[in-house]
Image (cartoon, rainbow, N blue to C red; front, side):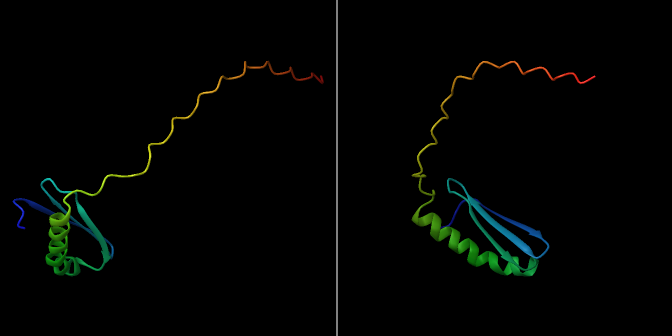
Length: 90
């Protein structure tokens, strides 16, 4: 399905490439690879096709099934004990 709006990001640092694609009402698709600008530009058409297939099947990633973390139990702090005075040697 053709998207009304599609943004493609390319970030290159050294020989590492980050590709990202974002469409309206869809979760982003991201990938990393090694290469240069030419490698990234050659990869964009197939990357966009993969993103469109993924978004056609399920535009949003599934919700996490990991339970929320339990809040730590607050314990009463012991009364601050007075430290013993240091002995005077002189």
